[in-house]
Length: 204
Image 1 (cartoon, rainbow, N blue to C red):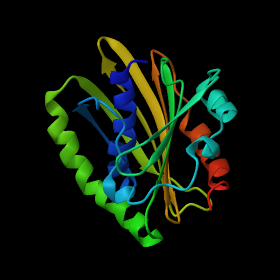
Image 2: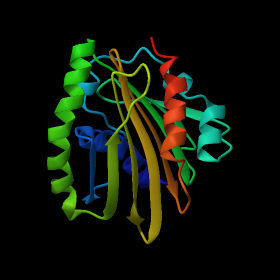
Image 3: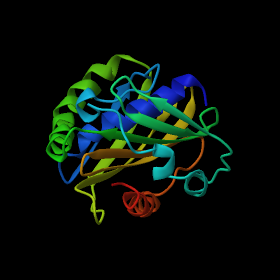
Image 4: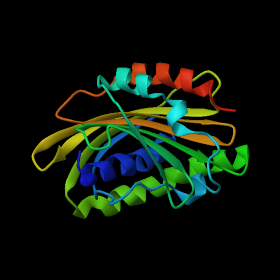
């Protein structure tokens, strides 16, 4: 998948977190593809101590995505979040982001702050070229302080993009697990939640 679509994946992972405030949120927006992965500074004040490639392993990502990933790629955002990419140059991009806040209360506050930011960002994005429909709902993961699951779909350059995402907080750690596909079917929300339960056990 080209860098433009990678930017969409990373942008959605952060942007849609803000829609998780109520029981559910849905809508559509046109969002500008980000040139590189980014994370909210409030959600990633300090460098993450957790290895995102261990939060979801290569074999687990392959099974979830229906792919056969052979390599992973790690990035660190300007805010200190860590991202593990599987299939970074394919049409099936799987992303695991881990951000660490200075305290559990700061992590909770960052989650809530994203709610108000997202609406404004989605409105501002109306001028650029990717139309995205999204649906985000709070969910329950045993052991997580907060959790939400989302699906999204849209078009870019006449092709269909779709994805499934899971977000959760445990203590000081925020985790986003996202699979973005081109002209394919992404994992189900239930499958993502099952992976989330496994991944929670790997966090301190």
